[in-house]
Image 1 (cartoon, one colour):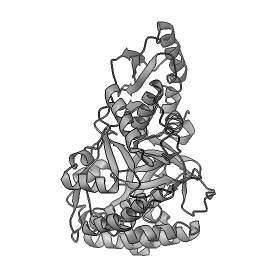
Image 2: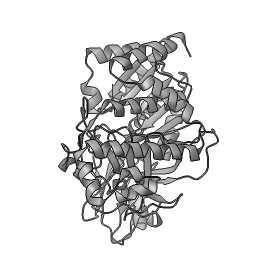
Image 3: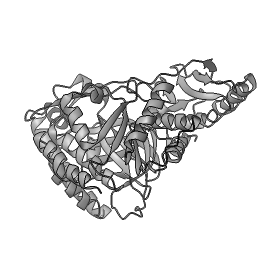
Image 4: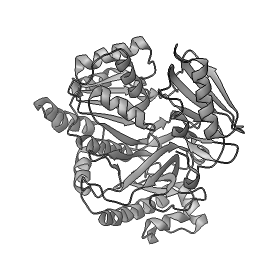
Length: 459
């Protein structure tokens, strides 16, 4: 660690956090100690924090005071996570309908946030200082797992309107002092990506951070143009905000000469899990309770796939209790070789909208279709769009090698997976634009269907 990095992480950033009213420094130190506790001890502490959190919520939040009364639920009697099953799950639509009643009567300053709506349901909600502090501390802890720290040169390839709109003078000065540079992911033209690669070579960051899709696109541009990027001393590439596919991990690691550390979370649900150097995706169990549930809301067995439902224990000012993320995952049973007692997400499959439904009743993950298209001659970019009637459009950005025969082979492979009863149309397009968030999604499903059962997944 350089002297300047020590100055940033030990002095400048703590001062910044204190001025913003965040207690992230002491909390990060607590998290770095608690991560080595046993799984049993972490679960015991989590149950205590959950009970205290719910008792505070029922006292100060009108929505939950009424809901708990109707359900006959007394949070003071909670002894385990199973007791939480009495409480109905929270959805985006419920938040939109009850946004004022979800605010605590004792809330301090609330910050208005919104999601990008990549799931088709944009959401406006609020955060208090405690929630922001916990998310900062959790991300900071995970960053340090990889022998990098705040103050190490960092390139951020991001597309969130929240971050981009706040590039005011104070934030620009802060990022400059902390050696963090933001590259907008909204425009990924050839000219812009060439410019970004030049910027990365000039800055020589120790870490990259951004959407997996945007980083993979940038890595592919470097490879196609024979731009060397693996000699810069990059230590790690952090990806988050969307599903990381195996081919994306491979091209990012090979191009930038550094491992990919995948993170899982969202603006609404919080910083849920992060990958350690041993390869495990650890849950931030100290202040986030994760349930994996089937379509009926029943917990699935360890190793089986269920929807991720989150209770964030640092959201007293605007509670997220049993919040449906729409994401699918499985929970591992083994302890990680790194020695941390934090629970492990075995697999994260992405949103239920990343699953394709067939008219015969099957549900398959996007990878089942992606494997039939990627790396085919002349396929420069692609996107699957499933309509409400379950018909599918495959958009292709075609190079000269994409002949009629290659396209016919692609369609035949897809039809074998989908079945003859699921309509499939191919449309050649000049380019595939990013989502409003700046992400580049392989699959967008507009079909209204419950989350896929683990038994019906085709991968």
